[in-house]
Length: 281
Image (cartoon, rainbow, N blue to C red; front, side, top):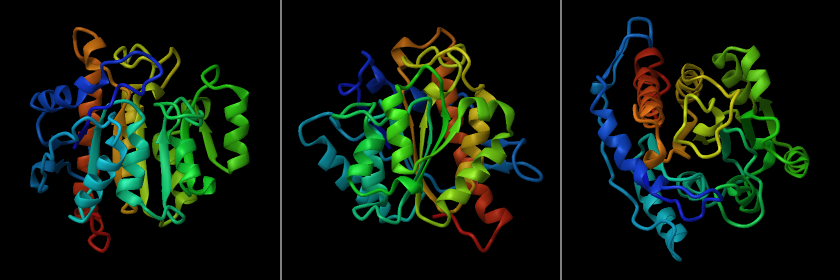
C-alpha cells in the first residue's frame, strides 16, 4: 500500500511521488531469488495484492483515515508493506497495524536518526509512538549515525530504554547478527519494521534528502531487511524517505527501495518453506 506523505517533512521533498515509482521499478525485476534459501526461492508463489495509495495522508484527517484503512488491511492476516512517503508514515503504520494498545508491540528501525523530535514531522514518529504507549524497551534502532542526532535525542533514547545499535557497530558485524540482537530484544511481540533509507551511504541513495557519506551499503540494507522480515513476529514494514523526483538518472534509490520490498517478500515466502510450524502472519 502506498502512503504518499511529504508535507510534514523537515527537508523539502517530493516523496509523495515514490510509491508509483517503486511500482514501476518492480517490473524491472524477476520473482526468482537465487541468493535466498537453501536453493533459491520464487516469490511468485506468494498471493500478493496492491492496495493502491492512501489518499492525502498529510491532510487534517489523514492520520485517522490511514489508521482506519490499515486496520482493515490487518484483518486480512497478511504481511503488509507500506511504500512511503516520508518517515511520518511510521506513526500511522504502527498504530494501524499493531494498535490501538501498543503496550506489547515492538518496533525495529533501520535509520540514521532517532526520530524523537517534538511536534509532528518525519523526525518525530518514534517520540509519537512512545507517547502513544509503545514501551521504549520494545524499540531497537539500527544504524544510528554520528553527527546526525543531537545529544538531547541521544539522551531521550537512553532514558526511554531504547536499544541502539550504531552505524559503526553495523560496519563491524554481519547483518544477520545485528538483526538477531534486535529480535532478542523484541522477543515474540508483534513487531513493525521501519526502513528509512537514509541509513545508507549517500552514494547509494542520492534520492534521500538526509543521507550522508559513511552509511551502510545497499547489500547490507537488503540483508537487514531480509533477516528481519524472516521473523514471524514481524507483521508489517514501511520503506521511507525516498524522493523519486530527486533520484540519480539511473534510479538507484528507487531501485533499492524496490529491492527491499522484494527481499521482504523472499523472507515471507521462506517462512513457510523452511519452518512449516511458523506460518507467515
